[in-house]
Amino acid sequence: MIEKLRRQDITALLIAGPTASGKSALAIELARELGGEIVNADSMQVYGVLEKLTARPGPADLAQVPHHLYGHVTPQTAYSTGIWLSEASQAIADIRARGAIPVVVGGTGLYFRALTGGLSDMPPIPTDIRDSLRARLESEGIKVLHRELARLDPEMAVRLRPADRQRILRALEVVLATGRSIAEFQGRGSAMVVDPATARRLVLEPDRGLLHARINARFEKMLDEGAVDEVRQLILLDIPPQHPAMKAIGVNHLAAYLRGEMSLEKVIELSSAATRQYAKRQMTWFRNQFDSGWEKIYPE
Image (cartoon, rainbow, N blue to C red; front, side, top):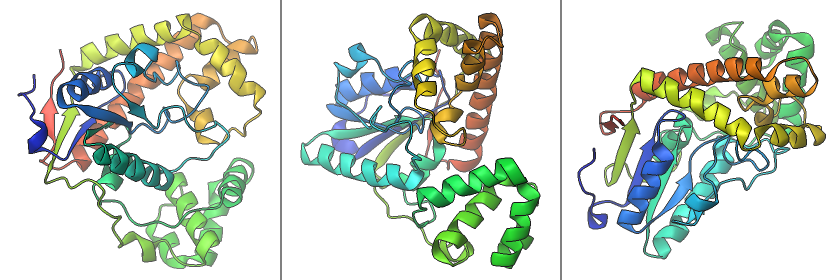
């Protein structure tokens, strides 16, 4: 599937792919071959508690090669791309200092863009601002927030569709945190942690039928291995629904099951469907955002 890699030819190995595509297993195989260490690039696998539901590498995987940035964040934390980039930069520097090759693997495209210098240099957003805006979105609706954006940042309000929830929220976060328009930050590129010219970049594109079959089988396995108990623990933490960890696929459906509002069979059906839709969005993003320097791999 992949021609033999030589560690002297590359400074890093990047492996992207949709959920359930087999990228974690490939990363372990290649890290062992190269003498590498794995760095997580999946925005949900950073969270503790949700080991099974986010398909984090298990103890047998972790024992094969060193893994970094998995399950190290409490679910109460509003983790961001900027925080990940800072932590990944340090992890990669430490790996290189040990004479090993960093193998970055995951399905969050923005993380890879940030790593290679292609992300706007956005300011950090205080948690209270982020939480307040998301609570207001739920209670007041996006039209009210768009009107507020028109008052605080009229340039961005004109550029954004009134129904564009995520971008309106992001623009409001920035202007409330800094007093400046997000447009001022969008022209600045992030620092390049991994030079794409000297890294090997792989993106997995599995057959759709194969991927769907894996997704269906994997969600049932997650339930068998304790995903229900993970969601029960998450609920006990009383985390606001707008926090990223609460948006992990399966959390809402399993919470409904625990309340007696949904059968386990329905949970499997709806969560598997949501995972398939998410995988489709991931693959579309990779095709549209990754340049020709990414080598396509077709797993069997």
